[in-house]
Amino acid sequence: MTATQLTPEKDPSAYLAVSRRMMAGGIPVGPVTHLAEERARLAELEWNNFDVTQLGSTIGAEISGIDLRDELSDEAIAEIQRALDNYKVIFFRNQPVSSEQHAAFARRFGELEIHPFIPSNTGIPELVRFEKTAEVAGFENSWHHDVTWRECPSLGAILHGIEIPPVGGDTLFSDMGAAYDGLSDEIKEQIDGMVAEHDFMKSFGHTIPEERKAETREMYPLVQHPVVITHERTGRKLLYVNRNFVNRIVGLSDEESASLLGYLCDQAATVEYQVRFTWQPDSIAFWDNRAVQHYASSDYWPQRRIMERASVVGARPTA
Image (cartoon, rainbow, N blue to C red; front, side, top):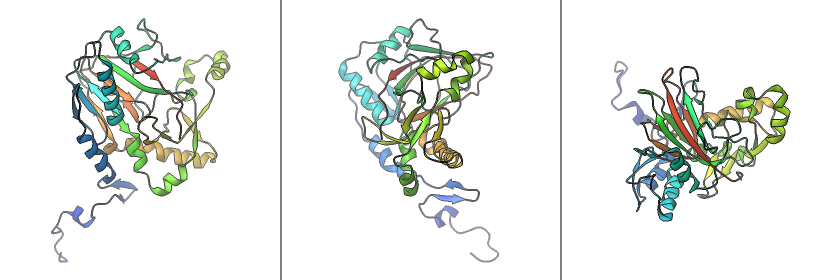
């Protein structure tokens, strides 16, 4: 390139090679190469009871050719579980299940959870109804795992779209295995063995009368979970911190904890780790609450959005 030639002979990216780089302002750009192996592995999977369309690079698949209103065989349920283990979140279209059928399907994967701070409103205690309107807005638009303030947080959740706004209201999911794998070796070494303190008060404290806070704290004390957990079924290492429920990383100063926690929580926002699901009436999403974080886009106000969710009780996370 001559002094007067401003346009390079090659694409500017060709000078950077295949590498992830920090641009001015600390913004990472470039190919997220560590996704390639998992993406290729998922593409080779085969299924007997339904068809699968892979959606995200390492996360998300749409399942077709199966009716969740049916009494599914144990073989079909086991294969749905295998799909969930591999894709971390799976989606079904055109599934007009009743509330009873929804709960019955969820029970095939374990005992169902009753949420102490969100009213059921369905007649089935384990099935929570989220009815968002002009008066009841959506506040789930932050990256989080569900109920990590429990000693044994949810294994997974099954969400049924009942009334969907004409535009907006998507749900995004982020792969916490990819997030962990993308950390530098130095950060992985730093957080190995660390634990974080989880607390329901960060998100639900405003719903509890002052005179009942001590009683509620006794029922749901502060809990500690590893910053990095190991998935009990896949053996995959997963980043397990979120801003909604984590107070601090134990053993660090307030400043150190806030800095590291902010950095780790920011990993969920990496677009390459995500899949975005656009709802239609009678769509269903089934996500692994350990392997993914999710974010419900609150861009549809004042339109109505009605969903029902059943959550499956999980085990205590371990490193």
